[in-house]
Amino acid sequence: MKYRELGKTGLKVSEIGFGGEWLERHEETESVELLRYAHDKGINIVDCWMPDPKSRDIIGRAMKGCRESWVVQGHIGSTYQGGQYVRSRELGPVREAFEDLLKRLDTDYIDIGMIHYIDSEEEWGRALEGDYMDYVRELQAKGVIKHLGLSTHNPRIGKLAVSAGFIEMILFSINPAFDMRPATEDLDSMFEGYEKDQLSGIDPERAEFYRMCEESGVGLTVMKGFFGGRLLNEKQSPFGVAFTPVQLIHYSLTRPGVASILCGYDTKDQVDAAVAYESASEDEKDYASVIAKAPLHSYTGQCTYCGHCKPCPVDIDIAMVNKFYDLAAARQSVPESVLKHYQSLEHTASECLGCRSCEARCPFGVEISDRMKKAAELFGC
Image (cartoon, rainbow, N blue to C red; front, side, top):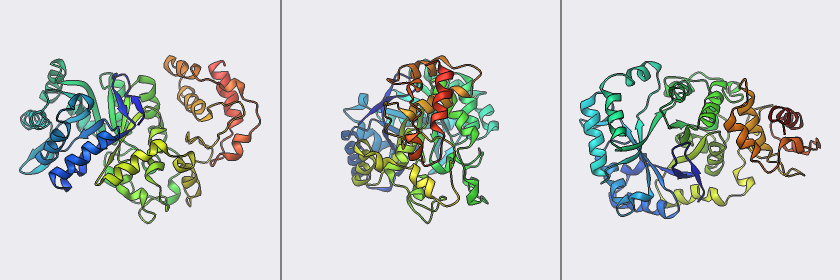
């Protein structure tokens, strides 16, 4: 298992994480065993947005004796009322639900306290005012939550959170289909009435959000990486073609700022299928060919950082050069953090021979040689 730094939090998290949403589907002992199995495979980050007692008890039992080796995303505002999940900012239910989380996880701290599920600007404004945010800050001041995060499906809210300056990481929904759709405050309506030829290139607002996260050191963890399984099914996929779990994991992990993708699991075989990413070949990770061959869907002319351009005769990491170029070119001046990352590359764009052999391999017709020239000019090397 490989581990990545989660933004500026100082936490190192496994590239493959555990989304706990499906735990309550199974008998408790079975789910505890599943979590422990995932941990044995190197998975060290788990998201607990679920307010139901069963799911929380399962995570608590699974972490018993090894709490320090887990990174927990615990949500503040996910409450259990009348046997049902209720998203709330009311201090009473919020406090009760969070104290219940600590008790059932048998811990006195949560690694990342998550401002739970904000998709509208109105709710963002409301959450920042009054008792709810006072309680969040109280938890942080006491060290009950070590870091502060946010969960959202809306890149506009993500951008507001990054700009606010106090959010350290964001749990965000990322997959190839979502990335091609514009921001919305209602996730369920994202694909209502769309035409297939409307899925063409990454939405500029989403690209800007990823750039802001990378530049500001706000780490990203990923939810809905498989679109609830729809992208694994040709008939349900908006692309009209199916991806593999490894391809979708690779897509998320190649987005700027992403540290971990949190997959949902029902079985040990599904854990194995996700963890297999770490030993997968470049061909097995190749999501770009799937997108490029899908009818009426394309990233034509746009780099997706897929790595199809390999190998380079002078061993330039073309995908990383393109990523840093995209991060910097959108700014009036090159961000210092991006410049340092670029300069740390073993080979930079100035070494490009202009042979264009990489362009013949690009599924999206990117004019790579020209981009290398622009990158060399922009970064000065």
